Length: 272
Image (cartoon, helix red, strand yellow):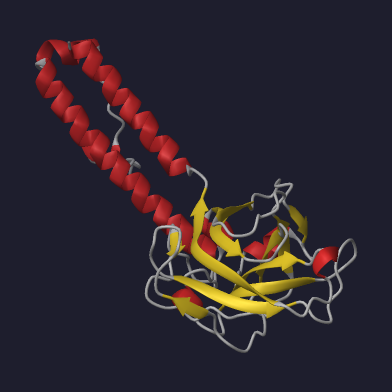
């Protein structure tokens, strides 16, 4: 019977553990060069493995580019308005950084407000519109997206409470998240939504659950709750949007890379 021999890994795949004898055989600078080479190879391996795992976990939903950014510099990127039938209006300058942004107008006529009142979606990125080239569509669980921010502005006479809605491609079910601080009128303000499973900002899954919703995001929507002071208001107010950014929290890959770099720095100190 043939004796089994375990496969031999190349030096790049073996953790580098210099012994006392190594320092006697190899000059310190040469040992540091060898360690740097091997650490670089291990980092590249970690990156490759992490990408492969992410693609396998994504399943049928497409991957989201990380981070995903929509700045509306040249057009509205097929983002829809409150009607769900028309696109936002592009404004060429005047955004938070002076560049272009997206805008819409809406009156609250016929809508109730205050506690138990109505809320309205103002901005819609949807897979049917191919908004932002569908850059926000995909498996947010596999891609590690746990945070989304946006710049908003309005000219209503009172501060407004904004919300985010993150739905599957059929627009249901969705996760609803609230912005606790009201947005004052007349100034660009950052919305920030913590989308981790423990986030206190997420107030509903519309009868579903975290995994079902975030494993296949098709719609990203932002809107406002109508205050009592503006209920049934016939005046059309202007609402602006810019710099929508979806980002992940630090990944295990970053942590592993950091550990390797700490090891390298420790070796450098011993060589002095």
